[in-house]
Length: 444
Image 1 (cartoon, rainbow, N blue to C red):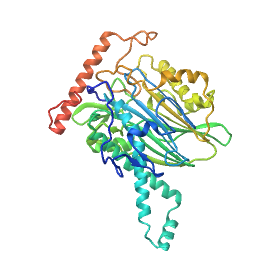
Image 2 (tube, helix red, strand yellow; image 1 turned 120 degrees about the horizontal axis):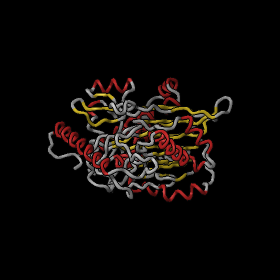
Image 3 (cartoon, rainbow, N blue to C red; image 1 turned 45 degrees about the horizontal axis):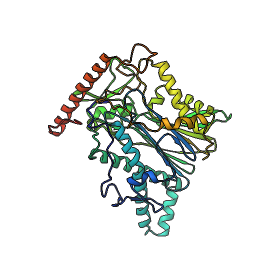
Image 4 (cartoon, rainbow, N blue to C red; image 1 turned 180 degrees about the vertical axis):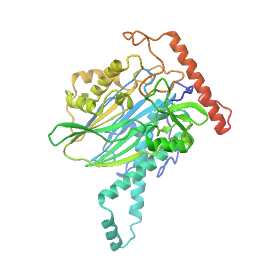
């Protein structure tokens, strides 16, 4: 989605700057439980997983597609702020630095939520100077559930805004024509809070009155052709239309150039179109879970492009073990890509399955055998020098005419791909110069 030449194929080491974010300290950020959380310390935090595997109540899996380096990231963080709280997220990067953006969001966004929740609650505790009668009146006006919802909504909005600002000024990740989606949830007891930007999705597997499993979609795919999204983009002088060779994929375009062709209306990064209607404000929602609700699935659009909500629920239910559910969903998506779009490049897939009863069975031998090869392999994969626009369903570059030889592409196709990518980079470079007056090429 927008092509620029990446500066490097290696991910830079992230060094948090002093005073970053609200309530930030020089060493890190304090959670409600009094712990200090630093970006350097995240890998040592218990009950936090960011690669294919399982936790106490969830399993996660990601698989690289055929568009280059795996740009999907995911996280499950149990005991997030208390024993009854879990944070889950799936982040789908796009553009030449999309894998760096999605990882940066995965690392920083949960910590920002912790920071803002601590900040908000500290302010509330510090302003307890009202009379008892005033407090009683306020309790009548707002229930505890409403207060909790408003609290998390404020934290989500502030955290997403701060995350985008951090990306704009980040010294090591160029986000002018790169970005990431984010579908995130907080499970706090029976409360479920969701913040979503882009076209990744969360669904709920639940039992109906007949004890049959049904799928409930929890988030909206924020595509550019949604009426409210399209209207905002058009009011900001952006354009929304699909190309002739992919009429099913509406995209966002600059008012004066056919770039970058972003296939979503909200995202982190993508600053080339932030002045033209693309925003990072999350679509926030709240749901009260019941005993009939069994599990939640978060996945990137590589899954939803080929599998329906009902099919994903069916795959999870049919898994021989809970620990293998996320992998089975990705395997099913991979098969469907080959069947439905044999000449297209399969997209990256990332899946998180959170089981709401908090239980996890033992891993199947098949799952255990595959774990070593399924851990995020971004660093070991060849990064393409310049990415094409990222088709949501179809790739504009057709793979080898022989479907049986999926790993081979002709030299002509590679040359055509590089030429188109370079032309796209040049257009965005001109856009950047036009907007900022700077003469340096973006990402070169």
